[in-house]
Image 1 (cartoon, rainbow over the protein chains, first blue to last red):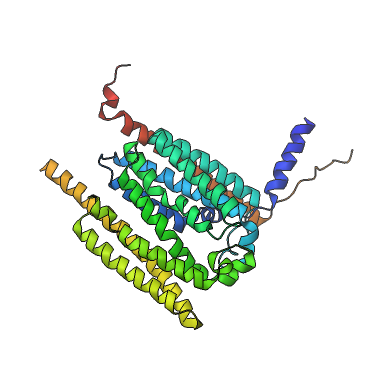
Image 2 (image 1 turned 180 degrees about the vertical axis):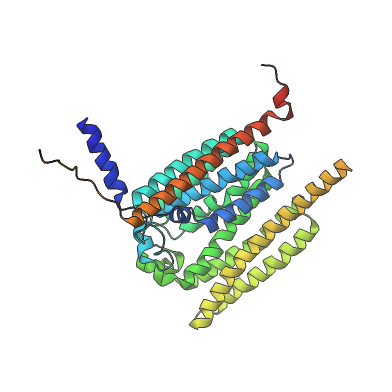
Length: 317
Length: 55
């Protein structure tokens, strides 16, 4: 009897101070990252040659989104110490003191398990295994290992952010294809110039937190050179969906134009190295890189969705 | 009359009570949604013949 009473007291103690609201838990899931994951996973589903049942597709996307959110919660659990010292992250629920660190860990682990099992049951176990690998890669390989040890952290860690279209394609087909791997490659090569453009501006923040981002370790000049190199690599890679035949010529023209603009902006970052204009150029590239990826994936997804709609209409006609 | 011993218990602040209630509602909604999702997914997986299967 006394043991039960004691455990009751423990429960009362552990919950007593918590004023965390559902929105704090929602913030742990990094909703903006989740929306990007859903968007790229949808594109992966749409390029699949076989059609997925809309209900199964919706449930699969939900599982993928929750899995991505779970890895965000695990990231915020592990990075609570460095989130406290960075301006960009100090208002997150854990460093701001609104949510206990261990609650973030429990929440992240629970959602990781639930999302993987749900995707396995709803879609297939290849997609579930890929989702589990994505969560593991982001939470363990990137967050716990690479982020604090190497300036190539976001290069290798970018694989986690690049996997959702492969997971989406696998959910629709139970397979991995060259097309889904091309989408993976585009996001993978896009990640370094995107994050390094921001890191150039936030170098002081990263320095204070002790994160070895490329501008802090190798210097801003080397970072500018590498941004340009990745942009030059990304521009032709963006044409691959058209060259491989799963996007139209219209996509190819759009991708070519956007790729050229990306390289020009990267070149501007490479040339303008001092003063407030240098920061503006870097932020301009950062902002454009988001637009670049969004438009590329929206074009592919839009084309495929339109084709599916036409096929459905002609079937019923 | 013997003195009644009150066990030491933490009294939740109104703010903590309010947030706990919000969390409970959120968990309830999430569990309900999850149950509904699995119901709909089951119907979708079994297909249109769900009502004409032999028992």
